[in-house]
Length: 406
Ligand code: GLA
Image (cartoon, rainbow, N blue to C red; front, top):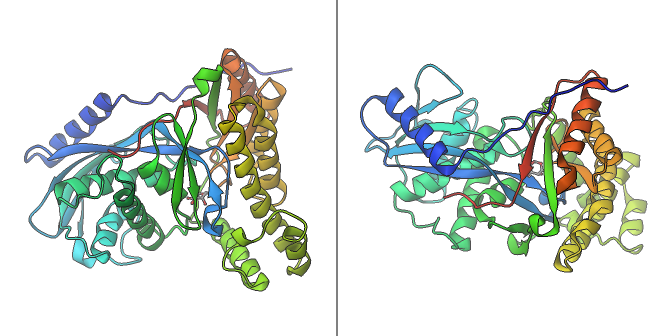
């Protein structure tokens, strides 16, 4: 018997709402005038290609309608003053010249880390006042951290006249994405790959971003689910999710050890055919390495097939690839968890076309591709499955491919 369960939706703010919120937060907390402007950047979901970015592989994220907003004002000194709507009191202060790996805790590290990485790249950036607010759910595996980095990056680009964030200037935006990755890796201390920052800065509305992490090149793949009467449902499990807790780093280290043993630069060099994958699996050091490599190599292959199906206009044929991706992440890569498996199981049992965890895993969110007229039914079934399992109620959002940081 199923427990009754309410379905809670997380709505995205309109750009006007988001800008007005950070502008008034800025004016209320700093009490000495207006910001120079407001900027924002999206969270993301990855359609397929998980834990492939740091292996030189392929991934396929879209930018969400849910964005992080900043109001920012340039200063003439070296000071950074920060306020956040999520922190009701106080103003944090950081001297930019004193920023180095290990010196800034918490969310402020993502902000000052971007300015630090810009300076490391030789760009002339100084102090600033910034107010932050977001409708990207935090800790949901939807890249709230990359959205914060990217919104700060385009804001600093504007107020210090760097000229890298012009709409459509993919080379400039690629440089900003690299800066954001350095901020995250070296100042915030999360050893993530580059997918999230690329999505936040280089995605296009109505398209999925096919990112080749070997050389950073991208292809914009048309992705218009509404034209096919399909909807991408995102389920935020609210399960604990932290990329700095060592599990993510352990997966990355395992892939690097496997590549070294195979004598390749990255696992991208291992092809899925028997002479590639079977040869590699034979040479590896133990069962765990075999499973990790099998996931990465087959997952990169699934991205290629997924894109081929999108290109051919048979979007509703991608379901088995999504399910295979989830099984591989669960069984071979071991980054799923009970909540994510409950989403996938209950979504598939209630009519989804395909479902999988998205992002780093260990909690966070899952996605389900659903016929639009079945969205309520699938969401209800997932909420009931959580209630039946005694899990904390999940939250739901609808993902459409939106614009990058601006
Ligand atoms: C996190 C990281 C990304 C990527 C995914 C897994 O989101 O930030 O770089 O590795 O996990 O695909």
